[in-house]
Structures are given as structure tokens and as C-alpha cells.
Amino acid sequence: MQDRIMTAFIYAIGGIFLGILIAITWALYVNPTSSSVIIILNTTLLCAILGFLIPNQIERLFIWLWKLFSN
Image (cartoon, rainbow, N blue to C red; front, top):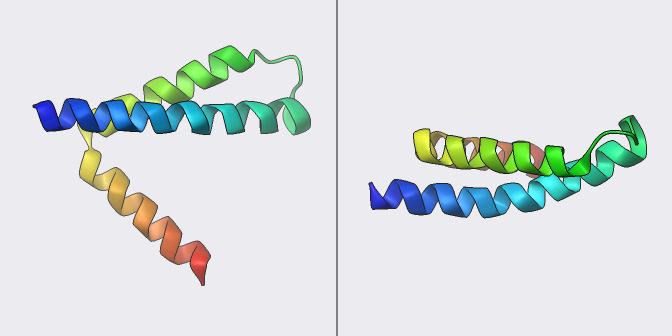
């Protein structure tokens, strides 16, 4: 249980950075009137929940994406 909580915490920190990047991109190219704070919070919560529920699948997804884009 503690491993899952630590994984969720780590993914939440990653979600903060991902949310900031998504919020900047969203504001510049999609819709500048959207709330950046809501985008960051939603991304952080989504990453934390997925990191708690299915931590091994997320790691496999990132490895698969890395292999896909590194070629």
C-alpha cells in the first residue's frame, strides 16, 4: 500500500509539470480564456489517480511511447 501511495505522489509531481506544459500550450494555441489552474489541477489529479490504480501500466505506456518516438 505504501508503494502505491509513493507512486501516486511521484506521478502527481510529474502531473504538475505536465499540467504546466499543457496549460501553456493550451493558452497559446487552443483557447487563451481557459483557466490554467484548472488544467494543472486536473492533470495532477489524473496522474495521481492513475499512478495509484495502475502504476505498472503507466510505466509500460511511457516505455512504449519512448520506443515509438525514439526511432
